[in-house]
Image (cartoon, rainbow, N blue to C red; front, side, top):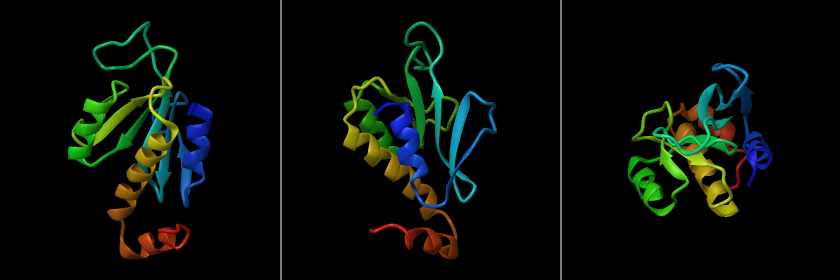
Length: 132
């Protein structure tokens, strides 16, 4: 998936909105005003100590801490969350190495983790639109 496909996939989720609280270079995806993802172009000329890569878009996704560590072991393009809580967020480098379906699963999990922390009323207004 490229950055346009990722953005379209996330914006298609119920109650999702795009925001720019960190400046115009960082797209922040929120469900009912709660962040579940960011998307930005990596900076630098190659992979640096923070894991950012030039020329590739990077996305931060919320993740269960155990799964976050597992994904980092499996995929070199998954690193601890850049500028985020490294236990609960992963940065995914969109370099084409992660299968399309796996990226969608990671996005879905991030979205649902955020929804699961909402009030029952807010959860119900979102879940009614999902076939789960």
